[in-house]
Image 1 (cartoon, rainbow, N blue to C red):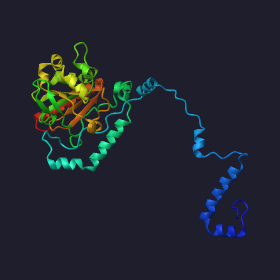
Image 2: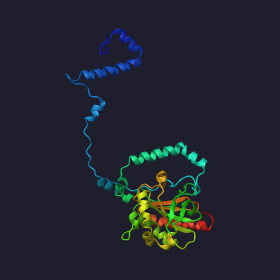
Image 3: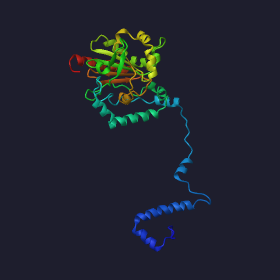
Image 4: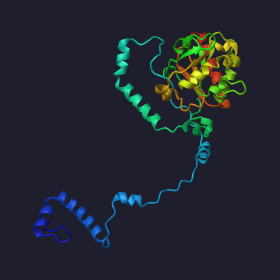
Length: 321
């Protein structure tokens, strides 16, 4: 057998000269053999996987608290994209053809699959740990409104009205009015008699000044959605409705909804990144989200909401909204 190494037979040399691609492979083989030959007796050359396992693991020096402190030192980005859904929502039930099209929609199936994988790979305390960084705030509100031609629609949320226990839809409530929508996404304990919900204070820090200024305007409304996606929490909440009514002013109960609707498919589109954080949206008379805020409001954010609400009301009065 001819050995392909440093000393080659004459006809092998001529063959390799005529086939340069083969010559490159032989050189690679020769270099590998030379490395193996340089090993000591009884030793074999380690593979790339073995070499990787021989490297010491990097030391884990940062705890969750230290990581949160480091994250707090970094400034938050401004909201960089419109929030909402592209299709105008409706309270009408889907027809059979629409349901059939939704069932066999490839994009919808991929979105559901992606959502399931994300939830399955997410830690149970992920949202709780995120609160340590900027109080759970992941973006800052813009100082101006989102353009009407770029804005997206607020999705339809079904809930039970706190005033009369009737079934209401945001698809019907938000049109022909300027609305501030407060999403309360956590804590059944907010119906307790001793303390207020932390999440409710999030949204209150945004809408308090705007509500005080535009409370008497006939085309303005504050819509609060108490969203409990967990079935058990939603059931417990119904047991404390009377206590909840005692904390909500009478004039705001007609626009206070108790909902257990699943928001997984629109969570990213709505910017609902943390279930322990409250979110506030400014919705125009056409049902589009024109401004949004999360967690506790900064002074500039609260002033921006007042200014944007006033602009929409002025345009609505002049027929330009």
